Length: 112
View 1 (cartoon, rainbow, N blue to C red):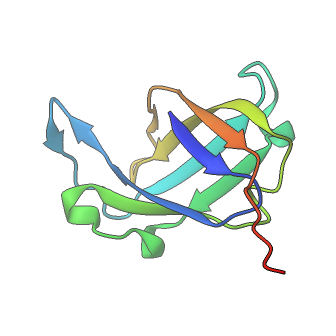
View 2 (cartoon, rainbow, N blue to C red):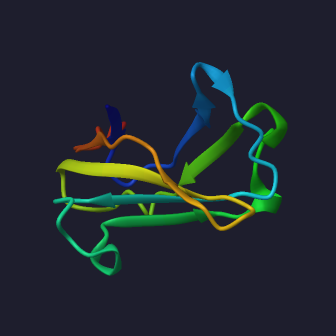
């Protein structure tokens, strides 16, 4: 599960593996989609990010970084389901196992 404070930037790394071995994802496109319910259409996703091949962090080792901006995470508090879909260079679609995203209230501090 990922826990993010509402309205904050959040960055995390993802390593794509198969049988515990990193997969070379050079040229692949990754799609991060968060929804309140998995039955929701992709067009109705709460958060949707595309990571293009040129943006992959270390593709030969299966690593990429997903960055959610403060506007991406400025959504209603609560739990979402998220998944990562991979489009390979031969147009095969691979879905990673889904997980949970928890958006929590941001703690604001004021100094008087």
